[in-house]
Amino acid sequence: MRWPLIRFLPRQTHFKFVKWAPIAAAISAVAVLASFASLATLGLNLGIDFKGGILIEVTTPGAAPLSGLRASLARHGAHDPEVQGFGAPDAAMLRFKPEAGRDPVQTVNGMRTSLAQEFPGIQFKRVEAVGPKVSGELLKNGFLALGVALVLMLGYIWFRFQLQFGLGAVLAVLHDIVLTLGLLSVLRIEFSMTSIAALLTVIGYSMNEKVITFDRLRENLRKYRRTPLREVIDLSENERLSRTLITGSTALLALAGALIFGGPVLFPLVFTMVFGILIGTYSSVYVALPLVLVWGVRRGEDAVPLATTIKSRPAPARP
Image (cartoon, rainbow, N blue to C red; front, side, top):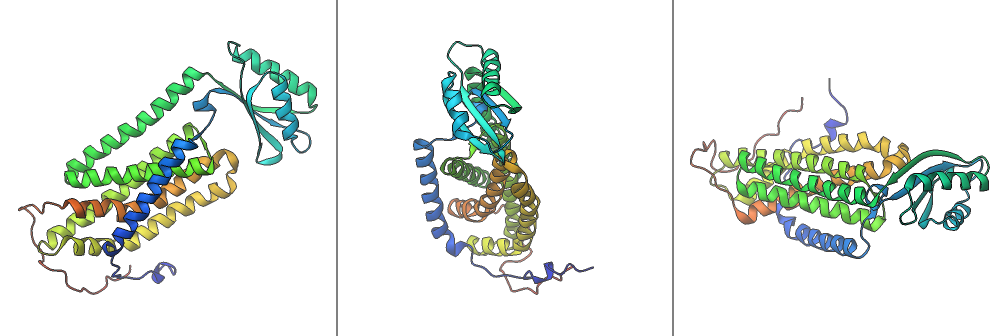
């Protein structure tokens, strides 16, 4: 059985990926600097998990009176109150910091009583309270998990390939993380524990792309030992281009439904994963491989030269 859409993909391509590497490097450098600038000035829009405080999700009989809810929180001693719409018109998310030295449980109970009196029919769907010490530990441990994941990835790539490959992969993944955090900062998307989970997923997907990229490159380096490295890189990327398009689009299609219909609760998680998949695919070609090209690779003596130069080959048959 033939899939009709797959037949439209070219069977053999001859794109010059390395030719555009300098332009891609300039774009990546500007994007990374802009991300650092946003993180230094705006910072991340930390959620209740990391910032500490109280979060209350409510619904009202009619459209949620956001300004009235915000004024009510301020009157009853809430510090830095934030009120925003949450999905449906009658839903709202309330965030605030309790008074210093006051028990969060008492604060929540008093605030619920006050809101119930001022807004008859209001319903409390979710209540969370996180202390500043716990939130600080969560933030530290979350980024520690990202660092440990990168170190383990470096060791794995070094063991399987070469140190140059490992360094290129880790720097490419760092590039992905910085750009993702920068975009979250610019768009003011809430950064919570689910965002850490999304970043870990992005690291896994991105590193998987690098492993597949390096595996094909290593195979062709053994075949074409006398061919310049830049030509072997172009050949390897053209050979795996259709696979990249199919797997990448499959992952994006799986996330598209959650991104569109998942609502505001899932949006930060899914949005981070979608952008991470896109930037991870890009960095595999235009960050990891150019770094390997700059540093060079060792084509060990044990490699069996199946061919010495790249020759045009017939396109492989489509299954």
